[in-house]
Image (cartoon, rainbow, N blue to C red):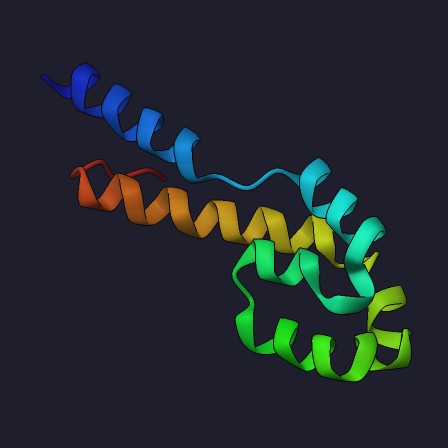
Length: 91
């Protein structure tokens, strides 16, 4: 039963995880409007970027260094929540 539950949890995680390539592509195309932040679920920051044009471009340039780390953090948090919901404890 445990391998089936783990497989279901992995499938659920695969359907909600975010991709760094997509986030960087959105940063490149519409970073000044906060598109990459909307994709990652950072609604408050993305609205602030939208109305200030990415902090006049400053936030947008700084974000290039933080997008990958943010994707990793979001994916780790989502995976932990999904595994906990399925009763799987990971070290």
